[in-house]
Length: 234
Ligand code: URA
Image (tube, rainbow, N blue to C red; front, side):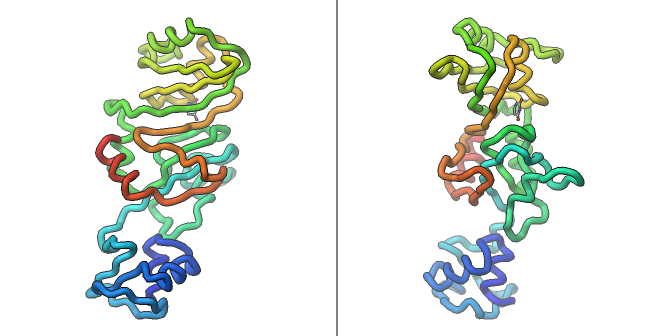
């Protein structure tokens, strides 16, 4: 297989992007920089490095997506556009969104093929923090902050776990940080105090923070540091 095709298959970038990377000397074959996209890769024997990383070991892919409203957090759907439809990457098979954001929710969504990491991030026992920016149809009070800290009855067997509410300017906007991930959890929490969420955006999940330079619908691979932080601290 040609070197540029191989790099595309490994999810490094589009054909034109990888050609550019090769020409810039970012790719080494058996320890030597090689600037020929047409080079025929010997997949058995060649050691191929991209920016110093041996590609043999990169079998997992991680993308940060700025989810826009209007997309389902699913791999495939017969009626609706899904978040996977926004990704133009190779390989794409096996990628899935880690957890669900409602169709009308925007913000940070991790997309990967790493089932073990996904399990760790979603496990209720791990209490991974998720922070959201929320807009409401009415004003919040300091009493609500206390209430969210104490736990709310959203119709589950138990009250919700302590949630941190940070009120913003007119108190119709806030940041909320939760450690659970029940169905429509944030909307149900505000519903339980008589308010309706009019806009919801996820800002962070564990150590992973939405890159605000990503436009809605845009995505980028996680950096090595982001992947390591997620693996270590979740
Ligand atoms: N809570 C919600 O209600 N909706 C989401 O999309 C995420 C958390």
